[in-house]
Figure (cartoon, rainbow, N blue to C red):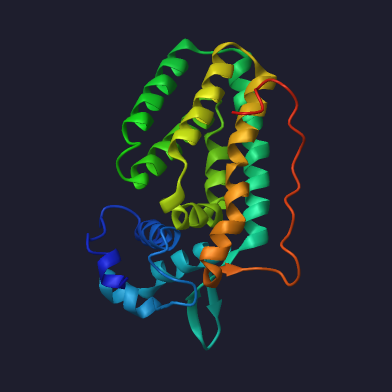
Length: 250
């Protein structure tokens, strides 16, 4: 992956430059087009984008705040490894936020929202036999729709910042992505919202967001150079108890 290929499509000069640079670089890092330890340069990116170094520096600072870059004085800027513990923490926080979101939605089910979500489930099913990348985009849309419908767009923006390390793991696992199972879990969430079952919706989304935990050790074993793992045994996920509302075999 080269800087020039990331910015093959020129930036929009009518919009703020730094957010555009941030978005392009974040996408490239999350999709693992850069490997941990790869170096990127303010000056090289500034030349590729035909801008000053200031907006690039602002983008670097924001990416460093998400744990995607390490800015090392006198040594340059490098892509970080995926923090194993950070993945567990981000997943835990995401679950807590989204569990409340679906509970809110199921308190007063909106038929228009249910129709929208059912349409999204159909779109997800249509890409089962195509590229898993297509499903990831639809999955993002599904969860963002839930947040927007609950009036929690700001919470979703917080989640996006938190889950960058989780997303890197998802792209590492594309070859073993259980798309059918994930769609079934989405359907369980929608079903519980539609019948006005806050406890069931809460349980369904928690079950869904724990799917990554079962695959994480295997993903680590297949990609050890991508992870920063604490010394000793792997950290054990600490989760809230899931109580009632959904079948155990969802």
